[in-house]
Image (cartoon, rainbow, N blue to C red; front, side, top):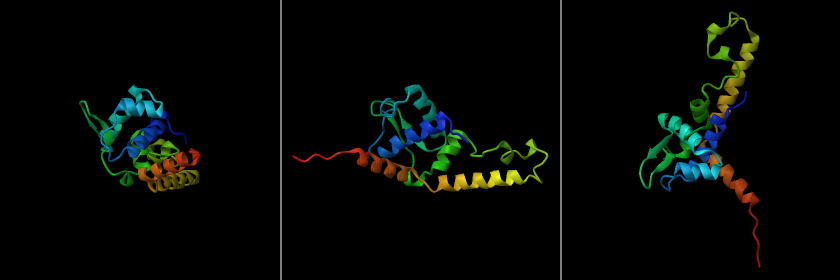
Amino acid sequence: MRLSTRGRYGMRILLELALNYGKGFISVKEISKKQGLSKGYVEHIIVALKKAGIVKTNRGKDGGCSLAKNPSSITLAEVLNVLEGPLSPVECIEDVNLCKRIKTCAVRDVWIRLKNTIESFLHSITLDELRKIHAEKVGRDQYMYYI
């Protein structure tokens, strides 16, 4: 299973919003610049996240985007379900009409367990935890010089 650029870039956009949480709105242009993404693609993803209630937007001079909820209450599973759709490794998990072997297919049971494991893992990580991981990584790359 591979995530599309929509899912991967969406996570980067939301990380930027989590880093900015509580500081007001951040412009799409600034998110685009900080994350190295096209402004148009950021706008496209923001629309989907706004529709799902994860992001809120404000027009005007001091407008932009911000998280609609606390980053500790937004899980990666919630985000990826919005941006990617169901996190199923095979289609027959979501649509039982795709295969006549549904009732006897042992392999499908393995795919269901895989889906459940992936979803459980992604539900266990919030944007706040992602923000903390980012802070640790950035802190690790910083060098302190004393004179």
